[in-house]
Length: 443
Image (cartoon, rainbow, N blue to C red; front, side, top):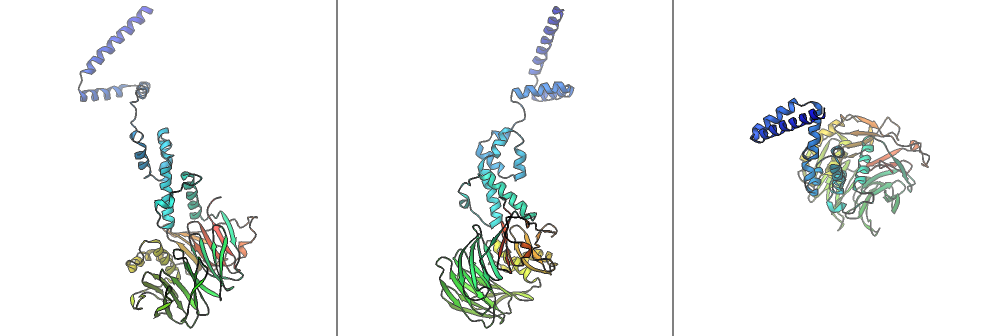
């Protein structure tokens, strides 16, 4: 029996050598044809054996990315979105280690922050966060998910005003509020601290420039005031209107206000000189470089600040909702003073989609993330609605932990009079003087 087995194995070895010798004389094309035919005739078990042999020799599937220098592999993976990076982690250990490179997640953090703020440079993110870049990205991503689904994670209150909030402006972590208690307050919304209180009269509107460190406020008694945010001193008082001021706007050199008296007055706040008095029945104004935009009940006009001449006028029936969107949109682009008219026209398609919200009484936009937050006139004040542009303008009710025992106030008893939104929170000024912060960051 052993003799026959040895004879069989010997014959098989001879046959194999004979077949290999014939294979070696084949040219490249003949070898391809032979191998294809051989694979076609193999059973599944034989194919498995072939696959194992190839893996032992490292002749399996060729990983191009894994063989590149790490810098190039990271550069390639930076073009993937979060879902793609997570999928790559499941491919192999090599790819998994590449996707953990902090350079990739730093880039992803920059992308999110760019959309949040409109512009950001690499120098703004040079410090490595304590939790690491990947965990920071997860935190920012989950915040956006909470925002877009209207799920508030935390509620805080800022207390100080003793009467209704009449106007508020939010830029970064600085909030400026005007009140009927005859004060203007500067708040740090991150810490919840009131950094300074300016006193005067019943204030109707406010504005401020963080880069110039000045804050302005107007009163129902015709005057406007400008203070330094650093020294807290009064820099100027501006008079000229004969009725209450409705809106105020600041730029690096000018301050403009509109009044119920049907005029817009522009001053150079650095010199105190009155530049122009423009006859315009304005509801709101906005300074852009040397141009002042004015909204009336039926039209938008643009005036040259230096001589008060009208540059263009356009019918406009979208009211304060459309005006608010335009202001947010112009603030989100790099050069809003370049061809303002065409930039306004490019935003009208979005405004038309909001035209059915005629009963809205308090609202604000985040045009970086296409969010519109509002309170409908027929709804209770604490019921906020979120609309995302590009999603058929469908609205969802914003949910917040109103039954949280750690809250010392009941939001449902507050009446919201002003709303400001940014990438992190909603800020609501109340009739009682309380300021409510609805935040989407997870603890």
